[in-house]
Every structure is written in structure tokens, then in C-alpha cells.
Image (cartoon, rainbow, N blue to C red):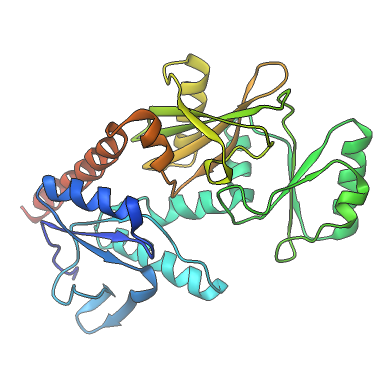
Length: 312
């Protein structure tokens, strides 16, 4: 038997509430919800006589009306799997999770993201993911022989940290794979400096907001100092590609990063399953948070309607 769910108490899963936690909590309060900030590290699974449940601090007698995932803490393989298991288990117990464990698994892993995008025919840079150093060196040598530079990235990472431009074999020889894995991607030549890419926020399958990020450095993340400016989101190719990428990964909300190559063609670089949006909101206004919360609340209401119909 499934545990009861609250109708008004919501969890924001985060280890660092900060600005995002504050705007989410205040927005949910205006919509009639109370908010608990919890870390997934503090949740655990229990299987007992009353059936399986997710044990969460402060929820001894019921589960929350929904969970908005703002962060999945890193750790050992077992620790991360347990935290994702909590998200999967909540979904199995009919608690709306925004984004789901499945969506986060697909997006936190850059290799799987690249694979799924390509499988759906979405333009994304050519990518190799492997463990063998000799094979990785041969890939880099072949690319450089074709006049193509590569970028080495952590398989798990964000905010532009740990990226390395491989423009020579010497650069590769000096590099170390992150935790033993090479994630190599063709560098999208954009004619910089300055360099520019675009972040598009897709919510419920619709591209809602976009900003350009411009930097003198080839890494254009806001956290690395890029300048963010509102960009039109009604551009056919930009909007279409961002929405297709989010649909391929079956995700409630996503920050889709796009670039234009030297020929002006759009390509998807990454899809972020737990995107920050402070920079986007500075560029586009408070409608960014409002749109996210409206979609989250709508998901919770749909779940209540389904539950009521099942009970009847």
C-alpha cells in the first residue's frame, strides 16, 4: 500500500538553497504551498510491513505533494545511486518529481546525453567516450590531422569547470582523464574571440526563454564570467532544436546549450537536467521562475487528479 501524500507540503531537494531556494520557496508560498529544503543525502529507502517508502526528515506520516530537484549531491557510485533511487522510488509512489530520476540520469551523464541526442537525429558535436589512453591519443591525432581541435570534458560536471582544449598532441599528453574516462568532443569553431553560445530554458516541452552568453574565452558559461543577454526564443531553428533535445531526453525542464558553427548551423552542446537560472532571470525577468513553478504546480495537480480518479 502506498503512503498518503500531503496536499500542500513540497520538498526542494538541495544542499545549497541560496538564491534559487529563496525564489522557489517564496513563489510556492504565493501559490499556497509550504516548503521543506532537504538534501537527498538525508533521505533513505525502507521496505517493511507497511510497504516500501522513502523516509524523509519531517515526513513521518505522509509524503510530500511533490519534489522540485535543485541538486543531486556527488559521492561514491553507491551514494549517488541511492540518491537517484530515492527519486525513482518517489515517482513509483506517485509523488511528482521535477525533474525525474530518469531524466537526471540521462543528462548528468554527458556520454548518455550525446548518445541520445544523436540517436534522435539532433545535431551535436562528434564525440568519443573511452578509457584507453592510447586509443584516445589516436583519436586526437587523427582529428588534429584533419584540422579539427577537440575538447576534453569531465563526464560529470557543470559550469564550465574542467574543460580543456586539445589543440596539439602535447596538450593531450599533459592531460589527465577525469576519473579514468576520456570524454572527447570536436570543438565547434565559432570564429571567436569573442565567443558566443545560447542557453535555452525548455519547460514542459516548450522553449520559454533564451539568453546569449558572450566571452573572450572559448568557455562561455556565466559562472566563468560570460556576459549574458536576453535573446529571442522564437527563432525557428533555435527553438526547434532546443525543444527536440528536451523531448529526446524526456525531461520536465532543461537548460539546453546551443552553438552556431562556422557555417551558421545550430548544434546542441549539452542539456542540463538541473540548470541554474539566476543569469537567465537577470536577462529575461521574473517570468523565468514563475514559468518553472507554474509547470511544477501543474504536474502536482495532474497527479492529484489521477490519484482521485483511481481512488474513485
